[in-house]
Image (cartoon, rainbow, N blue to C red):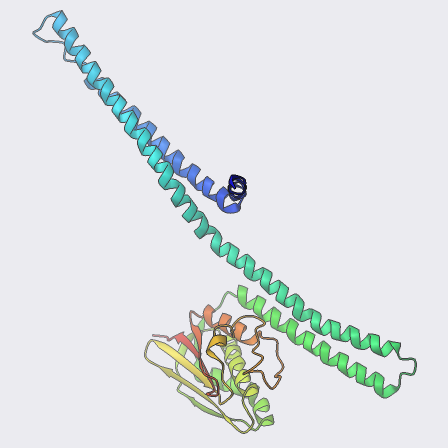
Length: 340
């Protein structure tokens, strides 16, 4: 049994957390020992300076020697006590510093580890999503090439299928590029009228709404925020596009924008199937798509839109939330700081 514990300790010492914690601890102990050294030398100098009695004393030589020995003994005991206390202080600093160093190391590394994990997960998910249409194209072409009596209609059908997969790849690549740009965008913020943002967003989704005979009710009160008009329009387009795609035909999507004087709330509400509470926290994750409630009609998509919308809103110091329930539709709410 002792061997696994020893191995665990060795593994811990070899970890990044331990190495960083030891670096912090070395800094703390160097400062503590350095302070102790300076304090001890200064104190000893003061002891020695005060340890000699004044020269003119009305006592004989033996008396002066006795007093000097007495003072020297007191000074030596004081130096010993001081040194002991400083050693104990540094031992305490070693213990407390070890704990503080570990906490600092974890706080330093956790965001980095989370970013690395998110990047790894994103790369894995993106690779999987990119492989799917490529595999479909490969399989379709292999089947067609095996046919010795390939007809023109069958060749056109295969080409059409390949074209659909190529379009899917293009859309997925565009979504990934938009996410990458949003991650590194340095916003140039200007006053933006929300009414104009919503109007432009509606113009971009009107054709999709007409195809499904879905009415869009616009009840937006004009308010002003600071931000990038193009990116804010893109975020609203994503919400409207989702609302229309997942709504039954001949229903209504409602868009409102209101202000309480400090923040602006843009609401996009649909009359779709709604989202279960257990799935609501994950709808903003990259590549996440609901298979049972929201996506029971096999609505096309890659699960990137809401993730991109959240990234855009967060860049504007805002937040995006969801209110929904199965069979009760969904309301996405964008909250942004209002211009004073």
